[in-house]
Image 1 (cartoon, rainbow, N blue to C red):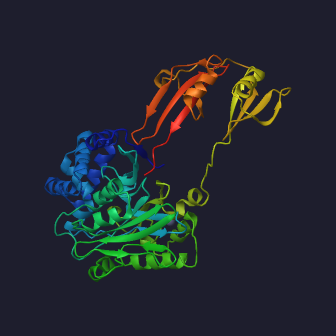
Image 2: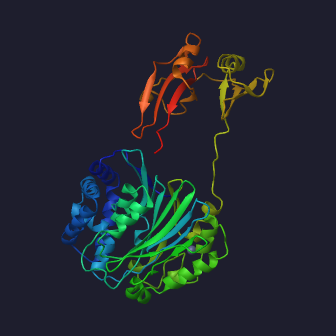
Image 3: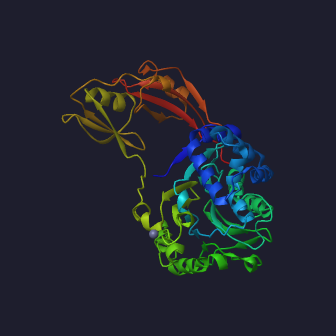
Length: 488
Ligand SMILES: [Zn+2]
């Protein structure tokens, strides 16, 4: 099961505190796992450097890190240290193997973007999906480790980031801009691909990573792997067919000349070749086709679908922790625990709920409700009224309301428009009207109103005004005048 958490507060420090409180023990385990991986008793000296590096990328994210620390009962240095885990491992010249395989296919403006995220088996339960609403109504969704502000993700402006660790001979001189923090800064702060490119191009990194940016908006799409490294930034682009694949070696020069992964993890070059050959000639691969291309164990512990090499000590074992699918155009991220071979059913045969087709109301008196919905509210029949069989299908415009006969029990208590005052369960339905004043005048004296007129505004500019009323059985209905946020 993928753990998903949606922040309920907007200011960075409070958001961090809420996350820290909610996942205090998970964050603690993550800090301890990295302390072990770093081989350090005291995280404070490097944590202090990391905190300064985070603040240089984004004061807001430094604030959030401090909030996570406060909420989880850890020090800000410890939380900053795990946010800079790639930089600290590089600084210590730890021979961390690269893994992670990424595929983007641009297609017809709705890109397919899939990544296998491979990391230490000991951290298999250390991740979750975090949904982060912003004051302007936009949303960042990121798969990340507990206590780390971001990694793989997507935002509601049609921008996605996939993540592959790289290794360069110049890595590790200092603690530079943490790549995980950069990814989150892109997702929070960039509404187009160019802003993201500019932000990353200027980042003073001390450890290498490929951040594959995927953009999709208004039927257009683009992807580029930004190969961050301390020497000289490079870029890798899709082929003429729109296919971009990335594993853990540099595809751009001059960075490729300083690539150390070719010595420590040469499986990366074969993984890339496998992906390219397996997807070659597929003109418009689905997410399922990409999953299938990633379902390869030819390289054993270094495979595209990575299972632990049992000959290694437990602390050195790698595995694919998650298979991640981004719908960049739709602004959503779906994470499946496990590697491409274990998520066949979920990805190849996804559940796609298209729309609400119909809903049912049970009543002791079908005729009375038909008089109300068809007669008083003027809604047409979807199917001929079967009065003698005591059922009716009413056309509500975009769904069918079926009214059926109930023979037992009592109707649930009448509800009010004040949500916290009502018992859990189905509440109401709302009919859109062009003009609330006119609709209210048309119904006044003919229906039982529940309450006065109500107005509700979302920070993104969307607002409604509406008024609740009962049908003769006491089911709560609304007439509502919706005002969507103006599009930029
Ligand atoms: Zn597998």
